[in-house]
Image (cartoon, rainbow, N blue to C red; front, side, top):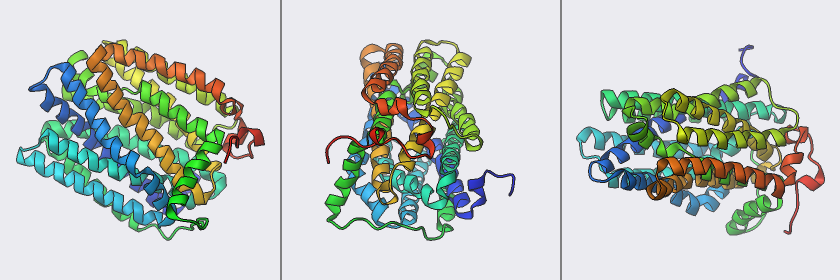
Length: 424
């Protein structure tokens, strides 16, 4: 036990960490197969551009529920027991996995079923992000919170490596097997969540539920450090994300099929996991703002090179690099958000952050699918990487608070002029 990182020596955080790991493996095993099934079914009757459009729609149907539910989900995470919310979300994901397993096993899987389940997963993500994001600070002392954030990210990224690899391999063996595995993992994750003891919760300020929902968005708007961090991720990944195009690249550009898709999907997570493990032992302590901005520039450059590559190993290397760069910036960004947000606001701020992350991921998938249909996949991917670099340089000018963030971002009080600006 003494060899474990300090947060993992805390029983409730260990349960949380195991739940996050197994849930992520289950989610990613499902996601990789859903994407493959959508593209494979579409390609039977459509050309490559129309099939790419279908991949973009999958992202859109996951985003719409999250967009609609974000104010409610953030308020729920601050108003109700966050453990109960997380448990309900995991059980909903278990239901989705069972439906897809049944439909695939029965041979009647179809685009409407896949899109319907994707929408339910969007609902689950709407509530999971705020509840889980706000829960970790309640499980560990503040002084080791950055380490806990890194470990939580490690769990997610490890799951993002293992999940796609397992999903791709098991799908080749028996198509419904990945969904069966996901069902078992979700059940185990729910059991872990039930072992977490009651959490301390700060009382919400008096007011109507609607006013309390709006308060979270107002806080994000006024806190320029948090606003800049959230919106940088939103626009950089929205423009530079490549996840939706991986089935297309695997099948029609790199010609590696479903077997090669798993490693491609796991590539970003592999780079991210190594980075997160490093940070769980060695937190960044100096010049965090400049380092975060540099990491996002590297993310955009790696995306552009991946878009042009026709060599499978080079493509894998670029995906690992962009994953490592993304994790570098995520670690700093999440530390900024968690350490400079009061506990009674964490659910609502986490909801805003989750909305931005989902917008960047799901709408990014929609953007990449639609632009690939119009411009071709290679042009769309390369242009997205270049656009991510341009956004980063623009944000460095628009939000000087990000450039100024140094040791204050990871534990020391920030300069007053770097945090709050703007009207009420």
